Amino acid sequence: MTLTEKYKPLTDAAAASGVSDLLVREQDNVLYIDGVAPNGEVKDQLWAKYGEIDPNFTGGDLVMDIKTSIDANVTKVKVTTESSNLNIRKGPGTDQPIVGKAAHGEVITLVSRANEQWWQVRTADGEEGYAYAQYLTPEA
Amino acid sequence: MKLTKVFLALLVAGTVSFVSCKPKDADVKAAIDKVLVVNPDFTNATVTVTNGVATLAGEVKDDATKTALEDAVKAVKGVKSVVDNTSVPAPVAPPVIAADDPLTSAVKDATKDYPGVMATVNDGVISLTGTIEKSKLVKLMQALNGLNPKSIDNKLTVK
Image (cartoon, rainbow over all chains, first blue to last red; front, side, top):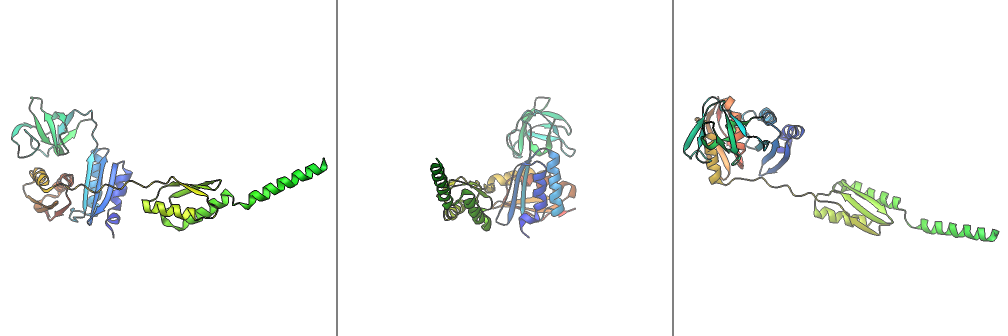
């Protein structure tokens, strides 16, 4: 079975659920799926689909980079860590010093999206710096 | 008067029979369609024929196929010339693979909150060892898949 066939349920689901800029190609026995999901739910559904094909993601034959579309007008993000506070750092990287913290569940200001991983944020106390984007959820 | 009419009728008949000696556009199109059908590379191409000029439209996979299609259509009897309006799709961009240095620091950032997870990067490949809770696995994999690795060698023990 080719990789394209193996992951067809996933690529079909991506196409059907409104993923834009969908790009699927194979190189050196790895399938690369790129795209932008209209929202976080669609992204999670696709990961659930991936989990049905490869439950613990051990195949080593797929790199799925599904980003989530974010409205350019979004200025508020919610801290969606598991339970802990979120570090706010001087620069984009865990090697950067911590300049502040945002509480779990707190809604803070999104200043800019420096890159996919690190977003520049500001707390209500005026602490400004970079936080790991995976723990931030845009507020509608 | 009568003679003139007969003469005119003959003239018209002659003209019609002269025209019908040349292949009709519809017949030429039918002949080209037969060529398009037999070659799987040509199935997304379409043709129209006007006064012996065959105009090709649709999509072919590459430039070589485009040339082959033109030649095949030119060889069909009754085709005076070919206007090739077929398009070739833009090549699909190859996957972007991050360089090891930025990838290593990005992996370090992504795995920081997973104390049981060890990660190394070599030639774009992220290797994972250690243990992780099932509930946290998807979140970690989502983060790592977004860092443009070549692949992920996941040997994590899932608790």
